[in-house]
Image (cartoon, rainbow, N blue to C red; front, side, top):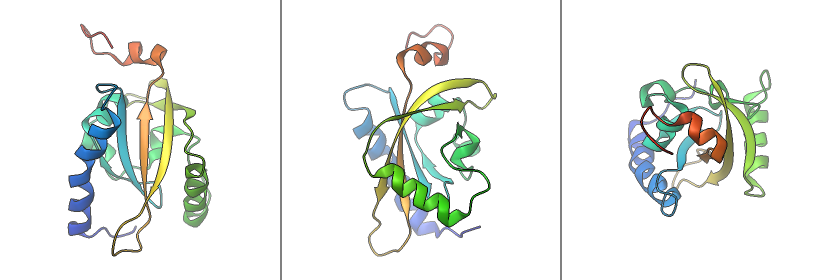
Length: 148
């Protein structure tokens, strides 16, 4: 498992609120963001992403994104292949539809957009994963008494 430096992780976490704010500027909470390392592990997530996946930050952090989103990474493939695949998905900046599972294992539809992130002074590869739910799935994710 790749070691994360504590100062590098703090830098990523300090940017998480900024990523969430930008993603939700117009949509008021409809988008979540996660930061993935080159292996597809979640190294940072914001409150909107926690809400979308109905999971705590503690449960999300360190998990593979493939634990929550089916088909994003190809199981059984090498870490270097998964990195190349993530880079490939970044190329056109399009939103793609996937099936996700929340913390309780319930399936729901999700749309993802992936961007490659440059980190100054390091050779670490990171990816910003923006997450949104299609309208029909927002109703299913709303808390009792809430309207999405």
